[in-house]
Image: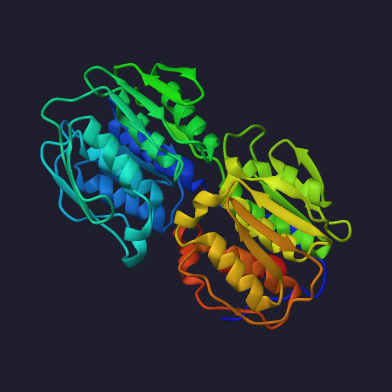
Length: 416
């Protein structure tokens, strides 16, 4: 499919749907709560649909009602067969711990490439709690523990979701739960902070004795009606369009303060040469000339890597993105995919142990960009297409994972 080219600066205002990360955490917490909860602004996408479907299989009632979701916990979670995780990290890492509370075993399946996504540390954590787990990647089976432990030590270098998934159920274990990260690095720390913040908002007591240990005290998870923030990582691609074309784009609904890693894009854009104006309830980004390459650590916000890589390819000078080696285990090996597609476009890029180096300033040539069933690679391709007429993409449908209306919203902004 062809991607739109911006013949003039991109100007406009965008409303992005709810945060996937917050939506799926809120759904799980509502399922674990002591009474029904109502969620407003929840994302409607494949990932959230998979989460709802998985929770329903375990006995949770999820009812759409007047733009909200009413989530009613069961008296007892039930074991279920063939819970579909698709390619959604939050589903495959958050639902198995919930299944550990069920009345019988549960089996999990996913998309063809789902078996390539790291799972072993989470499943090992469940084994440490006493569960019987068959397999170390999708498909696998979880059989609840007859006697539950209270301490786990896991290497979460591959995904912060391993920690979050265990923390979500900690308060409902008889003696609470201690989770300790044993690896050298911990990616996407803001996502763990989001989990902790949402648990505390529901009355759960969590101690953090050091930067790699969490202690969850036993007790109820209080039901809480919750309003979901817009997805700031999805918003970044629209703001980046202004940076690339010397345009002017606003995103409405931007929170004054947020734990979403996507909020860090504003600092990256400013360092690369864009102007950012923050206002109550919105953010505005204006491009003001050629972008410049930077050295940036995206450990806390690795989902931004494809968008920053697109900007880097069209910036002046060298950009080094560090701290994102773990995205080799995302929907695809994102570092290899970016280097391969940048080369196809005529750019110069190479992988490093923990990231990618991109030499900007080389003219790009039109080509067909492969997406590898990865929604973030669609964002990368869309940005390149803005300034490279004739660019195509192999698959736009995979972007429905987190933003089903992306194509409509993108074309509406770029070619109003």
